[in-house]
Length: 406
View 1 (cartoon, rainbow, N blue to C red):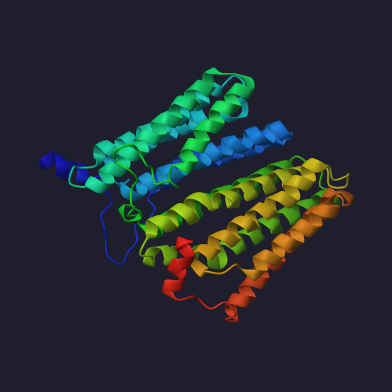
View 2 (tube, rainbow, N blue to C red; view 1 turned 90 degrees about the horizontal axis):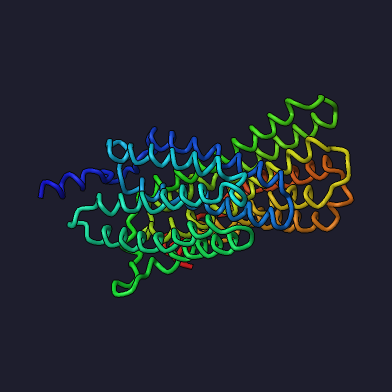
């Protein structure tokens, strides 16, 4: 009995009508992923070919997944306890190995990347399993299910680390597929079946705050990349204009996500009768295109700063238009999960960017950056004005629940 109580003490205390705050240990852990995001954007910038883009996308999916799984774990476990803090510090070490391996993950450091990733994913889930007292049968069974799925994917990660060339790509694609479909099928395993959504008890406000924190990480990384590139350039009218456009674009992205969306999402998941479902859809899956869009926009900012007046090649067009487009697609779907309707301003922005893509090649990189930033500013202002004027009234809780279930 004493052992059960001791293990149960590792879980976050439940305080009615109050969501758990993000701890300093979690913020410290996130610093590793500032580095990881920077490594991803630099890797894409250095190998912006179809194959390089595919490889970098897979690395991004892995980095996001290991981070979001850790956020789920610390949503249940209490980082203020010493064992959980030690777990986070060990995960930070694994994250540093993972991050430093990113540029050569498909070359000489593939095995290092695979070992670090598999150890982080399986290790923290086993820790959750062992930390859960038998009295928490549903939570313990969920940990068993997750461990089973991650153990299978770990085999493909390690096999890919030993493989080379396209074989590594295939092995890792299989591993990512296993991991990404597992929450959708609720971690079904033979004999024990799948978990019920009611089993996924999450502290919604904490999950929303954690994912908002990762958006800050991505936006901060884009500003660091832009600032570092700008500092090394000769300050001309073109480079200063490109820097200003990149900065305004980053502010617009922040405004679109945080001005109304982040707070509304946090409030809705805190009140939801099925917070696990909303956390899985809105924060686990739909935040991926948001973060990917910010990273891709950072790549565009670097390209525009270094060649503001030249011809817009395919790399510049894809990143300058594709980054904001991915971001808006992610935010419109994210906000739909708790508002129950598609934001008109975001839809208009998506259409405007799609139209821009048709003739973007005829614009200079600087002009392309200015136009995309202007579109994002219009979306941000439009949404703010429409919500302030009451044009988008909140739906009833029942309607929001239906939208979430969809």
